[in-house]
Length: 387
Image (cartoon, rainbow, N blue to C red; front, side):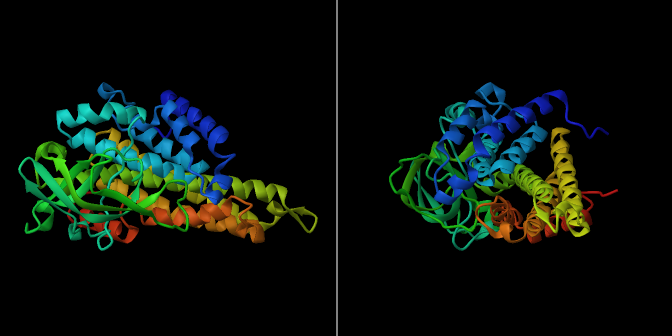
């Protein structure tokens, strides 16, 4: 049992840390408040090869181990969680394409996705279907050697930059159970009838767009059916969301780390009644609690990531890590805000952004309440053992 990163992982983390401290931390607050798109940061991530995290080496990607994958999202989220969203949706989609795509699809898209020349996301959620993906209404009817898609998707990250955008559809709306009639189609940018209609306003998670996408008589070749076989879309999407939960858990650790850093520095520098506020026991208790929550979340996230690298199915482990880490992120951000007092509520300090970003972590890639049910069912069925 080894709780240390190996030499390669430490070097990778240190490179990421330097990039975040130089390119993201100095501009995050101002760019987030002004709504400026982080074009330069995206270019920097391309140079580091980060868009190829989940792409196999044979297609020019990094084929990163899962612990390094987690380190990436932890470090970037420490700087600005919204930036991690740009890379997160792209990576989940690349993982899905690499695992389930046909040889032709992988050869066509993965080399450019690895460099960031192409970017992607994943279109699952709809206005009336979030957690209940079997309730989607977007349909694709087969006409000759084409599919014709009609429907609306919501909350789609990278929608304005995705090429292609994998879209979850019903190719057989009458199938029972519904998931047997669901498929994923790869829709290329510029396809007639494919329209990004609006960016959705959000409390936090800024820096990346979250969009409504409308598909009206969108025609795509049958060769764009992911994997080439109908009826596997739900399984393909869910398999990618397992790694997505490591992504969210790691982002949560990044938020918690930044909350700790900001709270510790403020406790050392801020004075009251003639001494640094860190000398007061009440502040010390909050600092200690943040540190305990942070380190516990980090260890659980790395544990779940390492289970994937060991070749073990980890849907239960990733769900547990995502539940725990996301709730610690919010608790740490809240305590950091309390340590800052009134300044914690000011947009001149970092902690108010952390406080706005943290709640999304309990929603993304499956709400925590739903994941608790998933974990419990696995335990009851004997598919996971805790001992």
